[in-house]
Length: 317
Image: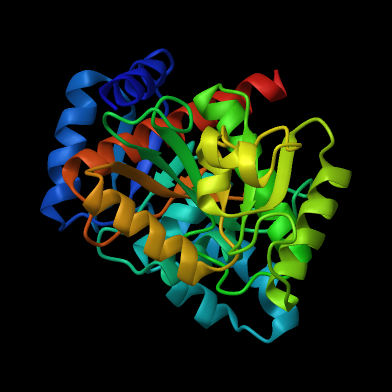
């Protein structure tokens, strides 16, 4: 577990970026920023009433109004939104004033996602906002030496089969780009390869088919029960023909109930580190936080956002 945390932080230090924090009164955020500055993981910008640029605020309100006026928003409403540090942070990232933002210590997930969705450009290759967690489990031989990506645990309550396929592809991209291991993606169910039937299972099967068609370069399989996905001995019995059964390191949950419950149980019962939720699907990176987050969680989410920003710059150069 310590290896992956150390690796993420060291990777971020190679090319620190400006990261915005719109929660200036949270002590965990303040402590995290002190560490981030000291260790040069990022160049943190803590938004306060004193350092919000009012000219930029007006500029952002104009941009937001032009984008949203077709939906009936007034300029005054746009200006009022830009008084909200969360929306200001999202627009600052979108307009190039920072490389990413980290929020959610006090804001709810729905607030953070709404700000990202309304202010930031969506990655058209995916066309869907979702989220994932990095789960680092101590003394664990499953996954990638105890490291997994769990998705979606924070955004889409009941994804359609098409959305589930896109969540799988987004999570695979994230595992490859940030964690730098070959993603082995399992779409989870209470059935393994036809051991049960029902519309929920059929949705997972169809999502698997769609994901494979859209991203044939990734190893993706489903439907798989959790033990079939990660335990080799079980996989040999239940899914012997699967390329990834028994060795999956990216786990895709059929709905938000399953994903959110599982990540919290893993975190508490297995004493795992849960880094995220990382927002997937925006062109520029941002991260939500659990409101129960620790200072360490904020530091590690920052490192991940810096790495994603590094990758963005590499792909544009």
